[in-house]
Length: 231
Image 1: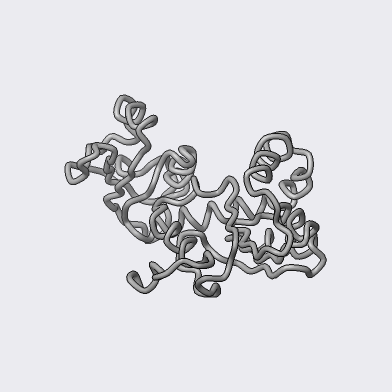
Image 2: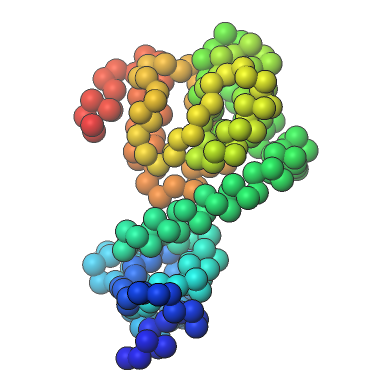
């Protein structure tokens, strides 16, 4: 097959090589992909017992990345690892670019202000004197509420800009740092938090198991810690 056939779109990056790209789709999107193939080389990945994975042979380029990103949370790049990494970097950059606009609307954006926050806060109840981990804290709105009610708060987010905004919003109260939900929480101690809040973020990560284990380890009075078994 020619290079043109093995490209997605027309862009040909310098030194690019044709690669087998495996993509796993959500159950709600896989039928669409099977009936409307992403590329002429598309075929099902027989190694996936769930029948949710396809593979294509393409030259990675701008158009391919745009196509993958267009599926949002309905797709996971299985391989190759360099494409997984590039997609993650592009998602983080998009998050960075939106950070200031998101922060400007966080106080009154309907889904956050009138649906998510009131219900989550009702479930949490009294927080005075509590130690709280605000995971994927964004610009620190939940942290602001908890701190105002007498809690001690630690917050993290994958976006450096969101962390800057969280620090500005909370006027140097609380402790905020950059951290990916999907990797071990090396900066946090076991048995340290009364409450962990992770609002509107878990759907961005592929494997919930390791993140839930990290949360469990960080909660007070959890023994033995899952970290003892997984690290």
